Image (tube, rainbow, N blue to C red; front, side):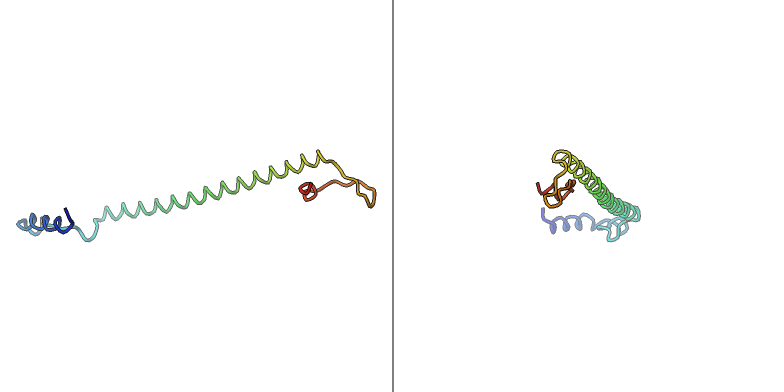
Length: 103
């Protein structure tokens, strides 16, 4: 049934009813529905904010774990390769992060 036929059927059925009973679709939602819609909108906004905050927290945790893993990797590489002898001065020096990563 098309929308036009549906509207005509409703109009025909409500033609004989008193004006106070024959109400077509309300143009303004009732106050309770407006409150429910307002609460739903607030909850949807809160949900979006909480998802953003949760994602930010996960990002910070991942960043912290990445730094810890990098520190551990540099310590292990430093112990494996040990100090290097400087060919010019003949002294010993410890390789730092850049030197360890270049190996």
